[in-house]
Length: 437
Image (cartoon, rainbow, N blue to C red; front, side, top):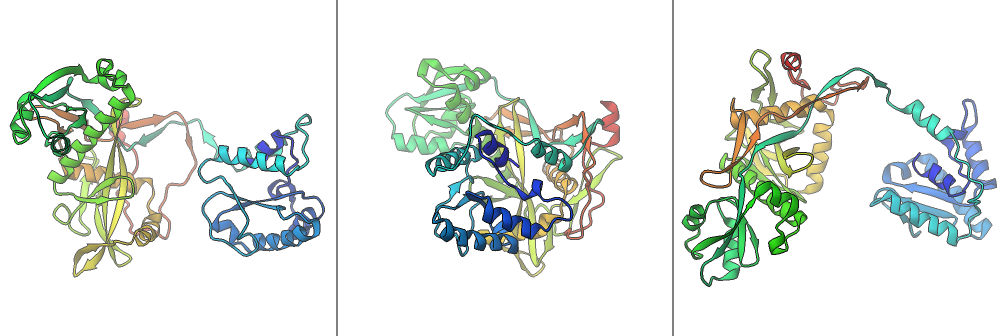
């Protein structure tokens, strides 16, 4: 659907069975005849799920015969949509890589077709209207009715007004200073001979006496620093924004560790999961407004493993300051009636997530996130992340609610593969909050 119209726009004629096979046609005969009598090249979209189909393997077999008949060893051009296991017939063929970028893949494919002198006419371009008609027939219909949505964003409502650049008043061990900045209780970003932090001078000198004595060289408006950087020290806005995001992230991680959450390093970030000290297996946690309380589990046993809900908090400054709470599920071995060691095999973790969580729908994920947040803060309206003895980053403890002007008829129900029946967990704000808006 994506590739074919773009090839037509470049002047190539494209055959695709989704448009050409009408009801009642002998589809196998149609495909075979087209491949044998009309095809100049066979573009094979490669991913494990499609290559495993019997029909696709038969088509590869037919194409192999055509390679010999046409004396064209490049008749089959594999397009790697996702990394795939080699299959007989195309194992040694060089693919065009679409997995990282479809746009780059298209450019490489067009270059390959041109080098191989595949017939096309860029002056007689005709894009079939059937592509769009087919897409619309299979598209999800939009209804002009509003829909309340729950996000996974926590709005930042307050940050310190000022960020400071600290430098030692005398000579110090530079490597020791950098390490101290990384370990600083109130979080810092090392830069040149000093570091940036929201903390006060008293905080710095009280916490880092083993490094030396410090002074404030610069005080900068925090919002301006994130937006424009600090031109006086040749610091660009992008670098400044990344540094402040790092401080925000460290502040969240310190907050989570202080509350006893279980940290787990994933491939690109750290998540914090509910541990046995916060929740018993099968325990439900209430969430929602008074009189509209729901409940959700944060730890339970499924597939002979203990699962634990957690989040990765990702700070972002656009379109406004907020944290994205990325939901995670971590699996451990069962030891007696509790969790034992964490499953260390990444592939096993992935299989368990796909198996256990595939029946969870948005209501379950949002409910667990709400329960997780209320477990952390109770009825408190804010989460305070300390960046100084008297300074904090203040987050709203309830995710942001949105109202979409349109909705769809997509089902939102748990299927038979659900890990548990959790009818009390719903999506969206309670009705009384919607009425207030």
